[in-house]
Amino acid sequence: MFFASVKTMSDYAYFIEDLVNEGKVKFEGSLEDYLRALWGLILKHKNISPTWMLLAYLVEEAFYAPPVSFNEDWMVYDKPPDLEADNPNQAFETLQKMILYQIAELHSMGAAGTLDLPGNVLFLGVVGPSGHGWYNFHPLSFLRQGVDPTQSDTNHVQCDWYDLAVILWLGQIYE
Image: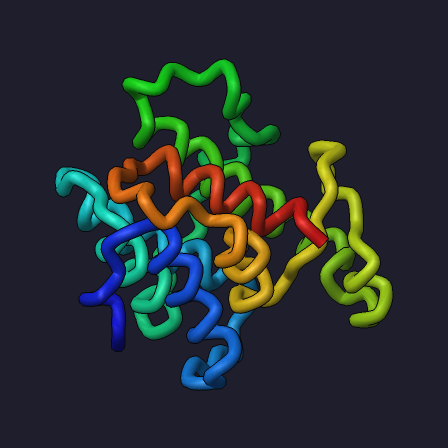
């Protein structure tokens, strides 16, 4: 779509805002499906130095890409990474821990019937098996809550996989 013009963190935030508000994306799958599709795309691009344009491309393309199959080995990711303590030189590993934790947690909640609760209950948030809160269960609201265009630093041009890990975490925990 318009990801080619995404050069800064602020551009990325406005890109997400447009995805949400323009209604251009129609997605019928679950957040777990979306994250599994995103993970498959991330794996295909993991050796490329991330840019805000690449992140925008990946999050949009995940609406159309087939999700990778769930892997039971991901269930070892039973808590999110410690974003403050993780080594900044291991940004991809931090992202991997975050997205696989989120996929595993959503998978567990789905199996337990938690995600079948009425929408008004989910809207108020639920606590997952890890003890962490979840407030967004649709990919568009999840992505929207991960960034705030009015708070984004317009001069922040550099990014790495760690930035995407933070965006995913914020998408989960922000109301």
